[in-house]
Image (cartoon, rainbow over all chains, first blue to last red; front, side, top):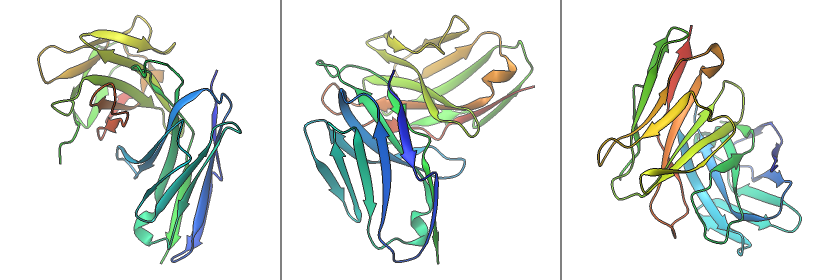
Length: 116
Length: 114
């Protein structure tokens, strides 16, 4: 059974710092990996999706990398801002040749606070 | 920008009662999902739905749960006889098609079972 772990569970840094959030998964046979942001009491906002054949994806100040063979992904946030404060979730979709309707397996998230 | 919407935002019910949670997925999407998040816990997959039938369900999705797409826009989750442990945030998600993999989530319905 796939297990997704995120480290650290919580992180508080001053504004402007670059930071790295980590995600690991036990079964490397994944189809893709998705990073989400969750604000308190709100839904999940998709940030980046990396297909299993890709090594990284970038969107603005965010860069996500994937090392499928070692079961790891990192989310790099450059020049952090107070508005980046949220919980960041990593989720994997299991490998399936047809890319079907499989649900995602989530980690518990990293609660990030950016201090002004 | 199109969004997934869910109603109600908060539902309070008595144990043993039936509840129906409603979702309107993004209009041209073909795949639909329900997830739940118990307070302080991980988001957990419940069920996926495609072409008017369940594609996959987790072990959580037992006979107490059912899903339906009653018309061209709504997607519902029914819990037949609620238990205290059903208290959670329930998220609906949709995905455009077989190629586009990103799942888009709604804001959630907080279900409180008393």
